[in-house]
Length: 264
Image (cartoon, rainbow, N blue to C red; front, top):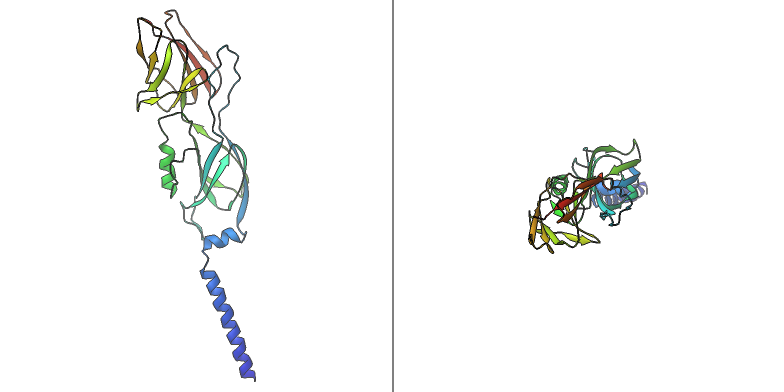
C-alpha cells in the first residue's frame, strides 16, 4: 500500500516538473522580464524641438517653419546584463513633443530620437548611420538627438531637446522671382505663403533663382551666401542698386533678412 502511494506521488511530481520545464522552455528571458512586471521602470520623457518661433510684425510675414511633432525613439542597451547584450535595441516607440510616458526594463540606455526613419534599423550601428545620413536638402526639417548612458532609476523624468542641423533658406516670392532650386541635387524649393523655402545642411545657399520682370537680367541668378545651421535666412531679390540688408531675431536662433541686388 505504501509502495503504491509513493509511486503515485512520484508520478505526480514528475508530471509537474515536466510541465514546468516545458513552460520555461517556451519563454525567453526577455519575455519573462517584460511580462511579469519585475525590473521595469516607468519613465516620463519631456521632448522639445529646441526651436522657438517669434511673432511677426512686418508687412510681409516672416517665414514660419513647420516643426514636426512626431518622432521615433530608440532605447538601446548601454550595458550587458543577464538578459540583454550591449547594443540590443530594447524598445522602439513613437513619441511626440511634450510629455511621453514610457515603461522600460531598468537598465542603462543609449537613447536615439529622430523624425527621419527611411527604414527600420536592426541594431545600434544602423541607428547611428541613419542619424548621420539625414538629407543635405529637404522640404522637411529632420531633428535628431543622441543621449548616452542614461540610467532611469537615478531619475525617472528625462528632458530631451532635439538638435537642428538645418538652415532655412527663404526667398521672397515677389514680382522678380518665379522659383528656385538647390544646385546640389537640383532639388526645387517649395512655396509657403510669401516664400520659396528649402532646409539645407550645407554651409552655402548654392541656389539658382529663376527671375522675371527684369528686362536687362532675365533668366536666373546664382544666390551664393554663407549660412549656418539653426538660422532662418530670408532673401529679397530686387533690381534696386541702393538695397541694403537688415538682421532680425528670432525664430530658430535668429532670422537674417537680406535684400540682394540682381540688377545690372
